[in-house]
Amino acid sequence: MKYGNYSAVLIEWNQAENWLAWFVDVERAIFRSADGKLRSLVGVSLAQSKVIAFLAHGQSMTLVELANQLGCDTGALSRLVSRLAAGGVVAKTRHAQDNRSWSIALTEHGLTMAEEAAAILKELDAQLLGERNDDGPRFVTLLNRVLSNSSVSKTVFGSEHCEISP
Image 1 (cartoon, rainbow, N blue to C red):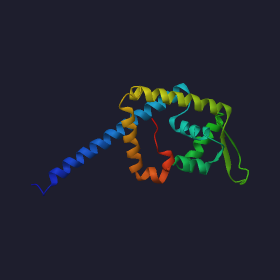
Image 2: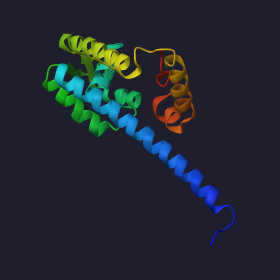
Image 3: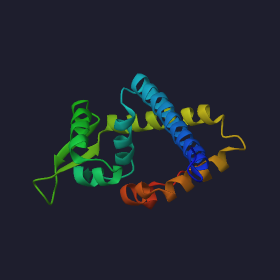
Image 4: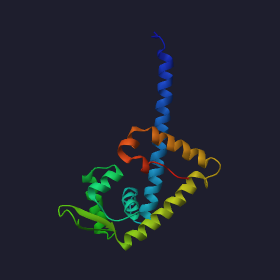
């Protein structure tokens, strides 16, 4: 027995569900590719490389500042930063104005890793997008639209960190 427009709604739901499932599959494939390459060639995970990339753009940051920039929880980030510190990638020093906080900065080794990771991710972009053929700018525009329409991008990352550049 059909209830009004139930069949049409079900078809629309299945199409939306399939699109979202496909998008998640693509995200997982990209994550696995990037994570695998970074682990094998640089010795860091994709999550660790994000921390390294943020720290490579400026001066030291506190754990709370870094967590806010990355949109993650301080507990998980603390464990990740401790692993990076143990590997000599970052240095933790007492914050100048607040002795309860730590300032986190990249070491020379960390700066080298940041450069290596950026080069690997750039190569992966070219591999996955086919050297950014004619579809590249349109693809970037569509991704930026998805990010700007996402409530997560507005609340967690802030607009300055959501824009993807070609």
